[in-house]
Length: 287
Ligand code: PLP
Image (spheres, protein in one colour):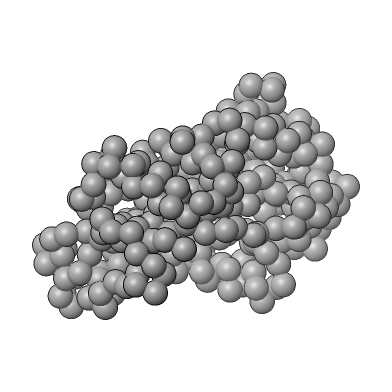
């Protein structure tokens, strides 16, 4: 495994960052999770756009130009010789002192890790996941806009812990007003009477790149999509429910808080959208 760390390609053993790095001390940084399909970096531009937007929003200067970052991604993938896998790109504020002041961390750290990915079994895509809603809330409006993909993932980790305790792979987080926001690391969609709904980002959802790809597919194949707030009740009585994310792709939900969704397996529209999504991933990449 070859890791890109601040301009060098190093082994996993040599990939070390400072204990004074503010990414570690304060979660001060941003990241992206990106898929490699058939050797191509899927939606590279969208991920880099989101990364540079997140950086601008938190006044973090990325020490690589957009083109240099893209070249570093491509080179790290090439060196790892992986046809299908996952890229974790992290930019932290960099090493500083123990104070909060980012002026003391003049140079951001950049690291790129490429790994194999195993998340859900093929069986789960057909039969769907069981999921639960959790008590952890996404605060909206929040000083930290959910559009920023920051290293502050404690909320999401608390959701994951509650999912683990319930014995499920993903869980549903509501926002402070009680509307459905998203999963721990996935966006959520519901389908009712043929219409596809997903919460708007102001409800506390990350502007997911898979989410955008699914909205685009829906529009292309003729499903009506509405970005509007909805509640857990709407999830319970939906005909179909699914999560989307870079790692999860499009994964059906068969049960929410012990309520069976639809027929208790991946429904026809979810199955159709997964098929369409998988048909674009290997042709829509950056080599
Ligand atoms: N929501 C959160 C909180 C996430 O961390 C992710 C994963 O990146 C997503 C949603 C899904 O976004 P994407 O499709 O861009 O991976």
